[in-house]
Image (cartoon, rainbow, N blue to C red):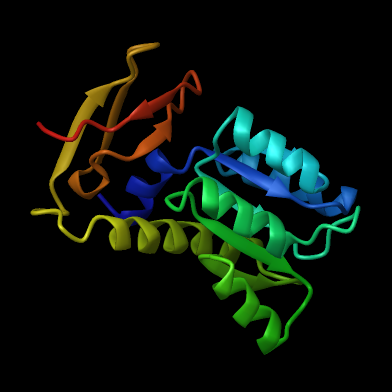
Length: 183
């Protein structure tokens, strides 16, 4: 099983924080076609509410947002709430200072617009895998696959053992489920 197949089990719900309606609608449609559930937030307030009410598995964050709050500020707030949820900046700003600030506030990835949509999906997988590897370096056998069932709907889920203890959303019912820590 490829690392992308494992990540697809883990990254089910993506929060897209984007104020440009056309870009947000494109991302929702495109990522939906790639089997991701997508929540949209158009500003910092909506982003905080969506993040709090239904924790995503991944966040795509624009840097420039309305209402005097930047994507950097929202990223920093999200990382203070949970440093295990990957946040990737998706912005038209292609400057080293912006990339440096993104790293300082905790962003796990940075991609500039315009972008190749397939490269975006690859980056989502790569960023998610890198963050979880960072948090689970102590795993004994990262290639072992563990199976468990969603307690809400009973769907059988399979992930690499390096994801033990990780929270994810069930791909069938959307319930937040913790991957068992032991076999």
